Structure formats: C-alpha cells, structure tokens
Amino acid sequence: MKKEDRNKVVDHLFRTEYGKVTALLTYKFGTVRLEEIEDAVQEALIKAMQIWAYTAVPDNPTAWLLRVANNRMIDQLRRDKKLDFSDDLAHFFGANGAEVDEVQLDHSISDSQLKMIFACCHPSLSQEYQIILSLKLIGGFNNREIAEALLKKEETIAKSFTRAKKKLKEQISTLNIPVEIGLQSRLFVVIQVIYLLFSEGYAATSGSQIIKRDICYEAIRLAVLLSRNRYCEHPNLDALIALMCFHASRFEARLDEKLELVDLKHQDRSKYSQELVQIGARHLEQARTADNQPSRYHLEAAVSYYHCIAPSFEDTDWKSILRLYDLQVRKQHSPIVQLNRLVPYYMVHGAEKALEELERLDAKTDLSKSALYHAIRAELLSGSEDYDASKSALKTAIALTQNELEKRHLEKKLEWL
Image 1: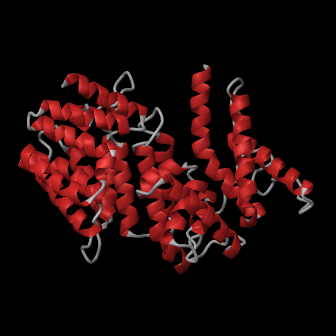
Image 2: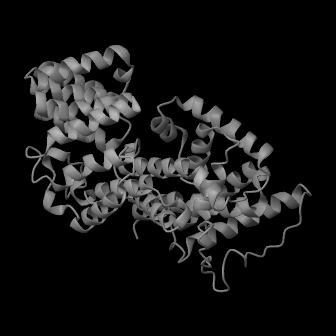
Image 3: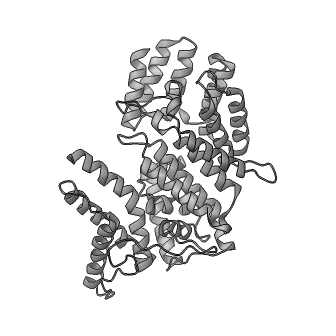
C-alpha cells in the first residue's frame, strides 16, 4: 500500500474509531477523567499514524487503539496513584480480540457510540452543550467543523466545549443510559446529532475531500440501529433516514473519474443508486405524521427526493421544491435555508428577481461572510449576464472556501466564465 493510501486509511480510522474508543474508555474510567481519556485516545491515534503509515493496518484496529489508549490510562493513573486498574479488556473484547456483540434489549441501547450520544444528551446540560459534546467525543469533530454546523465562531465552540466538559464531570459522574421514556426524552437531540454527523460527511467543510463517506455511513448505521428500538420510533427518525438515503444515492455522481466535484446540474443521473432511492422512499412514507406537521427532516428529504427522481436538472420539479423551501423558512427562520431557497427561486422566477431576494436577505443577515453566499450570487449574476460581477463574486467565494475540492471546482467555474 502506498504511503498516501495508508494515510487515507488512518484518516478513515480516526473518524470511525475515535468515538468508539472514547466511549468505551469513558464507561470504564468515568467522566471525571474525560481529559485524560481524550489525551490517551489522541496519543493512540498519533502512534497509529506513525506505525501504520509504514506497516500493515491491524485486522482489528479498534482493539489495537483501545489497548494502547487503555494502557496509557493505566500508566497515568498508577503514576498519579489514583487507581490500580488491571489490564483486563475481556469485557470489551472476546478472547480472539474480536468485539463482543452486545445483546439488544427492546428498552435500552446497546451500541457504545449511541450510548455515548444519549449520555452526552443529559437534560442537565444545555442543548448546545449536548450537541458539542456529542460531535466532539463521538464524531471527532474539530472546532471549525462544529462552528460551521452551528453557525458560531471557532473560539466560541472551544470555550463551550471546555465548559460542557466541566459541567459533565461535575453533574454526571457515570454514563448511565436512560430506558423507555428516558430514551424518548433525549431522542430529538440525538437525531439532530446524527443529522449533523451526516451533514459534515456529505459536504466536508475543510480538507481535500468533499464527501467523507465513512462519516455518512456511520450516521446512517446509528440512525438505523436507533430505529430498531421500539422506544425510539418516531416520524422524524424515519424522515432523517430517508434524507440520508437520498443523499447517499447520489455519491457516485458527485465526483467524476478524476475525483473532481460535479455539481447537480452536470451529474450523470444514471449513477444514482435506485436501491437507496427506494429505501429512502419507504422510510419517507413511514415518516408521515399524525398532525400533518412535517419536521425539517421531512422537508429536506422531500427536496432531495425530487432531485433523485428528476430526469435532468432542467426538468426538475422546481416549483414543488420552492414550496418545500418556503415551508421550511416559515418553520426554521434559518438564514442558510433562505440562502439555499434562492436556487429553486431562480429556476422558477429568473435571475433578476432572485438577485432582488438576495439583496433583501443580505440586508438582514451577515451571510455575505460565507463562501456559499458569493457562490450563489455568482450563479445569479451569470444568469442575468453580468459576467464581470459574477467573476468578482466567484473570486470572493474561492477566497472564503475551506474545502480544497470545492475551491478547485469554483476555480474551474471562473475559467469558464
């Protein structure tokens, strides 16, 4: 395996294993040692990067990372003379090093990462703290990624994470998982965490990849596992699974043979996974609400469904998509939703009217600081044949874009103008 391929494997393992190992060690050592656990897991990952970049990745990387991090914790605790833990990981792994399957009860949660998310979503913590802790400890998100997801500044997220950990240690000594009604009381925040995990994987805010499939598939796995618990059945969860399936169905079409980004207008729709579209459609059908009040997940899933079944970009049912966005704006009042709404608005009403809408939006928000704002503005200006202004907007979007693949895509657009 080439060194760069090994590095990709290590990056993949960081995303998939960080939360798993952190969750397991937190259950063993408690929340009071959360900082030491984070340090131990990060040290294990650094060691893995150093070793696996030149040797074969172990067949069971979770077991390798867990043992290294566990040993580091034991050494630290012995030095501090706090505890004398044995090095017995039998309750985590079987005799052959394979992970032991936990029994799935109909009133509880068995998956270690789902347990950790439910624990982080303790009602004594604010919803913001619950989300930040979950994304940090389970998703391995950095401050920038969380800031993008929550529309906050990086330094604000850093301070909030420090405070959230302090409150977690002070008020929640052990990660006891609620059962039955207690599961339901935390369900909506857990669903939001899974949604944010998938969103970061689907459109990575930074780095050299636009799609981090490992994060997306992990989010889908967690949601499907959650849906099998009878106390967690809810239309919002089915709607979220539908949304993720519709998005995942287009993975193969989002990148060309050179692994460059392909926008929706130029995607080869024959590459869409019809199996995932059908699975998503079934979950969307199951997601019907008794009061006919769709959540954001319902509305976003319906938008994605229209894109999946459209024979072409031009033949998309843009009027229906615009109506869905109008509903979402009334429910959420989100500047990002309002910004994304301008694309179907442009397709229905034309560039000039869409630019007027953009100006009104700009007057009451600070979206002009985002790359997406200028990328959409460039598209609208191009549609109105103001190519010089469109080029200027594209240059600003390129300067603000953190993701390398998206940056190259915008640079190509600039060359075509």
